[in-house]
Amino acid sequence: MPHGDDFSQIGVSAVITGIRSIMSVESREARQPWILLSPSLLAVTLLLFVPLLFIVVYSFWLRTATGADVAGLHFENWHEALTDSFYRDILLHSLKVAAVTTVVCALAGYPAAYFVAHSSGNKALLLLLLMLPFWVSYIIRTMSWINILGVSGAVNTLLLWSGIIAEPIQMLYNEVTVILGLVHFLLPFMILNIFVSLDSLDRNIVDAATSLGATRWRAFLEVTLPLSLPGLAAGGLLCFVLAAGTYITPLILGGPRDAMFANLVFEAIITQLNWPLGSALSLMLLGVLGALVLIYNHFLGMGQLMKGLG
Image (cartoon, rainbow, N blue to C red):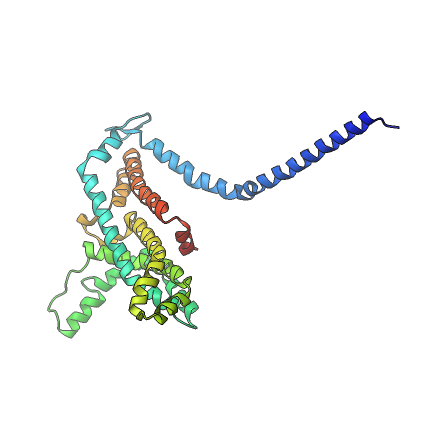
């Protein structure tokens, strides 16, 4: 017959075995999300963080007069990028163009998003039509403005045929056409973000405001518009970041004075093969836009932006 001490040892062993089993289950449950996320984390690491690390390293290399890159910790590229007024003026110009583009997209996109959100029966069709431009290459859509606004384009041809003008008007290769091309590209992003915000609103709130004596216009200004501001801010952030970092639109529709900061990065890396300076310039732009995203995330959070992108 086992003694009392034996029973005690058996009980302690059972308790220890149970604790180990519970800890093993909890450990597996804790590791499971990381196991499921590991493919995505590996892809993000290899495709985003590793290339970004190379860019950071390249920015401290030195480009010699012979065209060779000297590895090391040199700050000449950063000194040139941060102190040269040429780069500062181009950066400010890019931010100004991006801001104007964002404002135009907001003014043009809000009525369209409001119409889609309040349409009945054909909402899916309207969203499909809104997504149709994404089925065509961005470069082709940008170049189509040459056939519309060019000297022999559709607008000049119509004006000449109607007798309004006697000779073609030069409408391309200026800041206005760059903004026009950016609005053409970014307007769907703005509409989608505002639509998500408007579509999630409770219509009973507006009805309650009108039943309490508010006009439709006042109900919109004091109820609908404030509640849709997160979607408007998300669309504004997305349009601003994409506009400030573009180089295709000013390259195709802009003139020599309409280059944006991304064009400088393209010129330094692709044309001049100056990877160190191009890396410093790209990180400079990334820092400015990243600071803007952090400010947005601090005040509004990224949840609304994720809804618009989803």
